[in-house]
Length: 436
Image 1 (cartoon, helix red, strand yellow):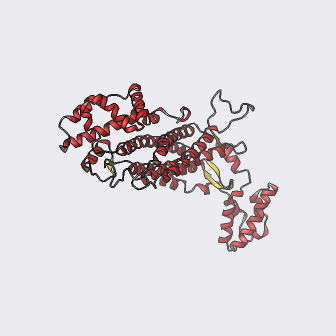
Image 2: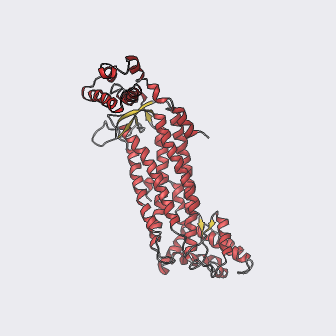
Image 3: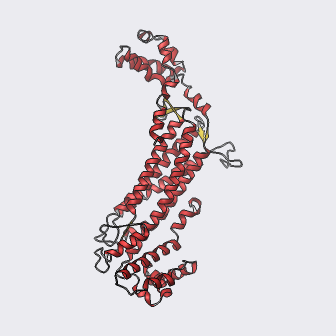
């Protein structure tokens, strides 16, 4: 995590104070469950909460770090520092548990906290996309395939497409949250040999998790692979929208562009530049987030009941992927909220080839009038190529073509160039995307 791309609320989830706080709650809830079962003496948990339930100040964190430097084990260092506050009752803390019971359960809580922020981010982006889509519902823009003019659409339909994609992303994030939020308090190799399964159920309930059906020494890492893959898909959705804006901002297109604030400078050498730096940044962020998916998938195959090859990976990708995605979603919302749109330029570009985008309508009309598809395609294409080469008017070329004149009148050809034809189902699309 670097400050440039880090928002404070997400960063706080991954700071030591929050992590140690969750570790303490896991241990305290486990004590309570064992006390309820009569395994540890009555009143033990009250003492643990009273003496150990203190803020993890920089001084406490430094003390834990000092102990870890000696013992080379983070959970033991934490428990040792906790015992300094709790006293003799600390001998009942961590009873029958293994380190991964604490680490994996804590990771699940942190990922749940991070996901809740990401879901809020997605909600904000969805609301902005819907607002802008409604604003430009019937604003003509040329759709492009392979970067080449295809047929008209509306800018609202374009944005509706991205809205629908992010709505799917939101559903996937909800599913990913459910997948990742499991609790393992099952002991050294997951057999509950030294701890009752009721302890796991109790801790899970109090932390908002579900008991892991079967753990080894760790929670199965296919869950984490699915979670980080979902983050990668969301990042790709962000990039798709970012790339669209970057293309629309190109000088020769200039149909939309990022907001350019007063005093902003685009180039150290060329004062005229207005570069799409924000969306280019999001393309880079998406690459970074997706790069963390493969390590998460490679973490699935651990040796026997567990090794720690996954640990160093997750200590990096847990914070970095969620922080980067949180930043990216928030930046994209801001971009879309302030996006500058040029409807006149969209219309100008759409008309720049003299109606060439109506070629399919003419092709279909000729086949409906009795011409074979092969002959109709050939007749339309030879006139279309003249438009590319000579900048001629497409409808006039069609009207002067003797073969086409045998099937279509001039009035019929004019009907093929009615722009409203392409918008007749926009309401249907919007109902599908934004309807209940």
